[in-house]
Length: 342
Length: 291
Image (cartoon, rainbow over all chains, first blue to last red; front, side, top):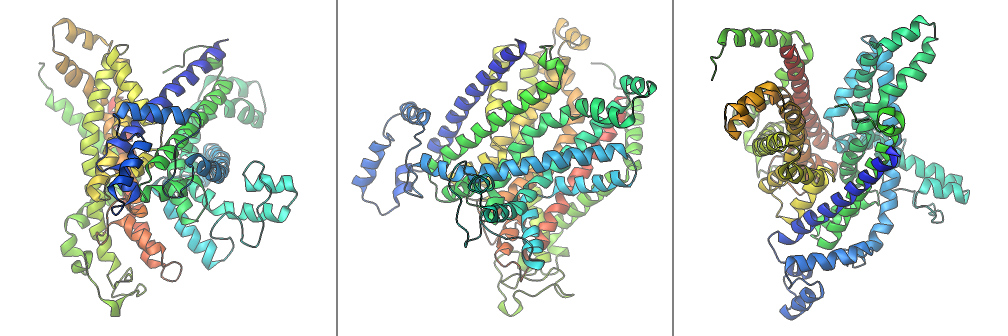
């Protein structure tokens, strides 16, 4: 019961945030200097055409009326026309979003699994060499932007050793598998096309590892510090005194509470990688929403910019709700409705 | 106002400094930051070819790999990359300092107000506003704002500043909302101290530690985001010697002329590493002070 209340509050809050975000983004896009209609049609378009365009987009009305029209469209999934692709923005989003999601899911899996593993190894062998290696790695991961990793990988594995494909999602000689989820790796399995699966996976490795290294380092650091802290707790001493095997203590009792802080920041890490994906997709020519986002930004395509930001905000909120549910599952204090200790 | 015990403060400072000096990583961080500060400050003197910073063309020397004459090689215009990196440090540091000196005071003040007035309308207004700002990765919003404005270093700094204050606000909010019921705050209230006094003299000093740590870590972050904006072409414009722009330009000549992109990339890593180590060192140092 508490949990449902907690969830309802979280979702209500998210709806508020997404509405607020839409106002913010709308203001940024409309209040900035320059005439959007003129910007869209170029300096040589005749004034009458620009004027008609303005009326079509309700740009001649006060800003709150414009917002009303925009919001009415947006809740129905209509974000207007993209001036860059000359298509409906919603259509573009539908086409490009799966590629980005596939990349992000892969990134998320890599940094969660390896971040926790590295953190556990680091805590298990605290102040021995594995710990030191992880520590050096985590500094490297924190201080290196994903696009630098991307470029270095491209150079090393793409060109010098020639191990992995450098651009796109699939080699040009292969056919895209039939569209089911939009994830090439999943679609190809459904279609039974294992060559496409293998090829798609190979294309995924470099960009997703480039994106994952930063948060992986952070997750490892958090897991390490939370595990070493919990190792000092009384219940661990109690379990040891009862001769419960060390392995069982580690995996059953220690891990579960120690990864709570790690899991709580997963959402934030995921979100910040969604930002860096903008650059990584550009480097690897990944046909996703982020590369589309950069392109529309360089073309000052306002409708599309607003839509891309709203979609990213939405993904971020959904991920955070999911993370909250996982944390609640792990932490009985939240699940059972006790206040989270500050 | 009570008398300040200078001797005690001095002791505390000495103890903290001792702790800072004992951690080799903090010393490395401080050294890196110092080196970068000096290189940036004296770039025209220490750079081997200071005239290469701007619009300089020397095609006979173009695209040379690293050699004794050009330690990091030259770019496609024949400009010495090492010299440009030194000048690039100026832009990175400048960006970090400007953004943080705009955002930290704003964020801290709002955080203090919201935390002290927890439960009031102001609290709700400020904190819900931060919720909205942090719902999108800062890099994405910065890109969007920059794309709508004219791309330039100044606009990039404004865009990042617009998005950075909520993080300070949240940090300070956590602290100030938890100590607003401490006895010394209540004592100040009862004796009729002004709101400003309570916020800045009673509550604010408790936030020094986390704020200093965050300032140092954020220098790294802001430099990363600034370099990302330039990388995409929405920040500093050529021929400005900006590290992000240099990496992006160099990326076009991969893999044959790898040095054009790789050395500026290392420079970014170096600068961010320095501020991260320094930030961690400051945090450890201040933890001792608490105890």
